[in-house]
Length: 356
Image (tube, rainbow, N blue to C red; front, side, top):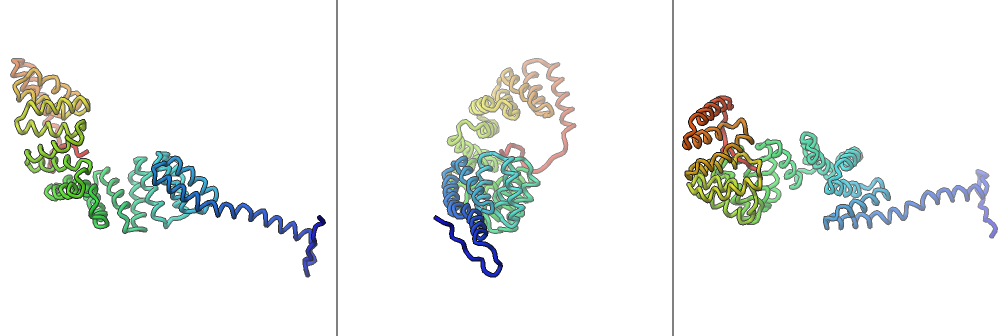
C-alpha cells in the first residue's frame, strides 16, 4: 500500500514529516495506557497479599506497581510497609526517606518511616517521624499507640501515658493499650490507677497478653501478696514456661512462707532463664528459709556471679555459711555485703522488679 501524505497547511511541512511526528508521539503514548490500566490491579493484589500476611508477595506486587507508575503514592506506601514487615530495614529506610521527601504531607509514610527507625533502634528519629505523622493525622489510634511504644522503650513513662490516653480516647475498647497504660502508671508510682487499667484490660479481653502478670505485679507493689499470687497463678495457666511469671510467682510464695512451692517455681525459672540473677537469689533464699543452708549456697553463688554489684546475695550467703559453721567465710561475705551496700546509690519510688 502506498503511503498517504497529509498536507501540512500553511507551514509547508511535508506529509512524511507529519507521519514521523505522529509515529513518535504514538510511541510515547503506547506504554502509558497498559501501565495505567495495570497499576490498580497490582495495587489490589498487593493489598490482598498484605491482608493475608504474605509480605514477600505484597512487596513483589507493589514493586511492579511502582515501576508501572512511579508517582503512585499507594504503591510507595504498600512497598514501604511490606519492606518493614519483611525486616528489610535498609531498603525500607531508603524508600521511606525518598517517599517522605516526595510526599511530605502524607501521614502514613511518616508513620511507617517512624516504625522503620524504631526497629533500627533510632528512637529519636522514630519519635520525630511519628510526631510529624500525628500532626498530620491527630485522630489516628495507631500513630499514638506506636508513639507510646517508642516512649516506653525509652522509659519516658509520663509521655507514654499521654500518648496511650489519646489512643484510648479513639478506641476505648482496645485491651492492650490499657495494659501498657497500666505499666506507665506503675512506673510513675500511680499503682492504684495501674490496677484499674489492668483490670479494665482483662474485662475487655481475658486473654490479653500478660494482663494477669502485670496486675499481679501491681498487687505485689501494694503489699497485697495473696492477690498477687492469685494473678500470677492465672497467668501461669496461660504461660506455663514463662520464666518471668515463674520467677514472680516463686518470689511471692517466698513472701507467703510457701518455700517448697517457691523452690519448685524458682528452680524452673532458673532452668529456663539461667541469666536471671534475681531468680537465683530468691531460690537460694527459699532454700535457706526452708532450713536447707547447704542447698542455698549454689544458687546464691550463681546470683553473685550474675549480679556482682548486688549486696543482697552476699548477705544471704553469709547467713547460710554461718549456719553451716563456716564462720570465717561468713565474715568475709558480710564484709563484702557492707562494702557493696555503701556503694549503692540512694533510690526511691516504685518497688523493684521486671516489668518486661
